Amino acid sequence: MKHNKAQKADVEWRENGVPVSTRFEDPYFSLSDGLAETRHVFLDGNDLPERFREGFHIAELGFGTGLNLLAAWKAWEDSGATTPLRFTSFEAYPMEATEMARALAHWPDLAPYAERLVAAWKTGPTLETDTLHLDVILGDATQTLLVWSGKADTWFLDGFSPACNPALWSPEILANVGAHTVSGGTFATYTAAGHVRRALQAAGFAVSRRKGFAHKRHMSVGVMP
Image (cartoon, rainbow, N blue to C red):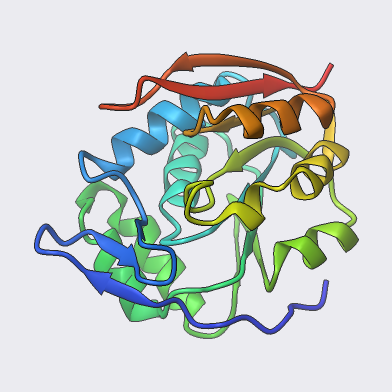
């Protein structure tokens, strides 16, 4: 797929080293522990790695620092998989490679994965290894998702919060998420906002709530019947 023009991320670094988007006034990951949040929300929320199989395809709204990718990639390899995990992400405001490296330096156990991602990011939003096929589709997801031809086994819905970035949680976007999900596919997201849950139900998912991460009371998960 042709990659669309994207605008650069506007990143500010807070005292605790957490990157914050000044465009959306929202942090890129949990102030408590971004990796623990990713594992709780996106891996456990989608029953991964238990559902992994050859050819498994994860799609994501909001690539950000690449943390979700690295956590999934490590889990894939830790599961014993030797074929590529397919990972497609939609990102309108990509970070610079140096910003990504600084953000991911929080987690030394991900360093071997982060180094490969950052090195590839300097030349383009794709990465192919024996255990990963990554494609980050740059541009406005309201347009790029509409023309995407793929279907995912699992969705990580990780845009900035619905209050800060409502366009990425619109009924139209989430209807397209549903249309690009295989039968039996799932989604997980940190938000339990009512309008998001209703839009995902309208998109065809059976939606439920689970315990959220850290201070968040609830999160949302769903399966496409």
